[in-house]
Amino acid sequence: MNSKEDASTAARRMADDLLGNQLQSVERREHDWLFSFSTGLRLQAAGPWRVVSDQRVAFGDGDDRQQFGLPAPIDGALKTEELLLGRTIQKVAIRYDTGDLTIAFDGEVSLEILNLSSGYEGLGDVCADWPRASGNRDGWRSARDLGNEASLKANDGR
Image (cartoon, rainbow, N blue to C red; front, side):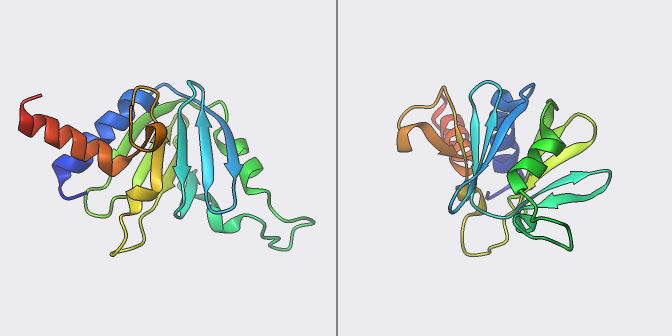
């Protein structure tokens, strides 16, 4: 994200497809996580993320498979589903200065996907399988692409 306007544009484009959705499943894959939503929309997170609930971190991706003195290691996908399933997305925001993505659900619970690198595009690792998208990696679009496309269309007069 290069500016507040780019972040705002990307957030609006994502919100158009995400608002009103509910999380259907979470899948831990070899190098990333896949969040699937009620309308078939999927969100891929290869970077760090967390779920915030009751004004605290309720689960972070680094907690997956950790035992923390419990009888068994934490199943991150199951824990995330416990926190988010059945909740409806109310708001989508992207911080222009860091590129962090926040998806706010009802009940004051949010999924935050973080950009922790100054050299790599953090939101390049957060992609959505936009049903209305065409081209670009079989429909996968990064949040950065969504903001850049909107900026290009505005500059082209489209």
